[in-house]
Length: 245
Image (tube, rainbow, N blue to C red; front, side, top):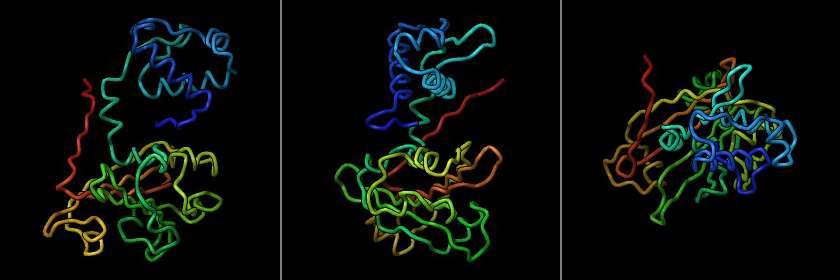
């Protein structure tokens, strides 16, 4: 999860503990300070400490053992690779941190593939927020579309023409109370439409990589679909996963 430029207290605590783990102040296998010790040292509330420890556990930095405490695992081996997943990046990174322009925001009829991922009827409308991203000063590099049910967009800043100062995940959690649980990611290759090729300044006969990240809650209910279109001549995708016995 990306932390905003002025992090809340729990995020600041996460960053401090991560730095201490990387510096060897809390070596792998050692017992992390207790909740009470962290409260006293940093002068924060118990909910702040609990939120920070939960994030560290979810990210794989620490383990919890009932009745014994929390033990340090170290920096997650795949942390840097997982952070490069395109779908995940657009869920957690504030738009204001990514150079680009908003080219569409409003209710539109959903394409068949998006409708299936959002579990909405054919020809139904959903809310679309689409941005053209430019990195490195070399022109457009990707086209990012965020699709969500109309009722989930109401009362949010997604209708605004200004870049979001929060990641999508944090914004929807704060405004609508929804919790993202997992993402089902699909990657396909196809030729671009004429409009897509024009927006992305793609050479003739160059294919697209299309990444679809379908976000669901813990019950499996679809919440959001992130569609990322990447010119194949400018991108390569990398992933890593653990091997279980």
